[in-house]
Length: 218
Image (cartoon, rainbow, N blue to C red; front, side, top):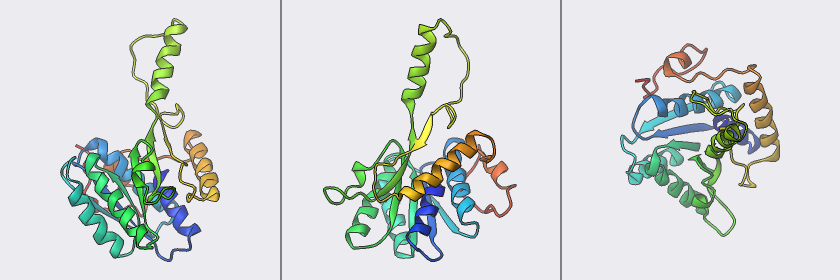
């Protein structure tokens, strides 16, 4: 969803041949889901787009992420999604500075709505949107199950259908047209009309998916 958001916004903004970046923390199966999902989202909108990747190999080195983000933004990258813990704050900081210089570049937040972290004026944020984990959905589900006498141990995946994940729309710079298209994509994923690979091995079987990502499944 957030990869598609970045690509759709690039089209909305009239960016020619937009490039995108992913910055991860420490490689592993969990971060790979973020990584390959983002790449699939971008390519679902712009099949020939260039998507770069970089791993900080730390959850707490924002300076390293910022240095990479600076290099990418200066080289024409339009949006960078960071799934890197506190390291990702460096991407947002660099996006703020770039936008203060008048550059049309974006950071994409993770886990929670990072709109406020991206503020570079009183009202303008360098965070276009954020991938959101809606933890409250699982809490409500558990409380309702207890209330209804239906609470027992089992594994439940809180995906889009369960409203366990989503994307933020706080930033007014995220075009209403883009939001409408993302809602269509969301419904298609829930209906099974669009299938998102969650592992590198599965994603690499998709036509046009890059074969040289730094992600790992194990």
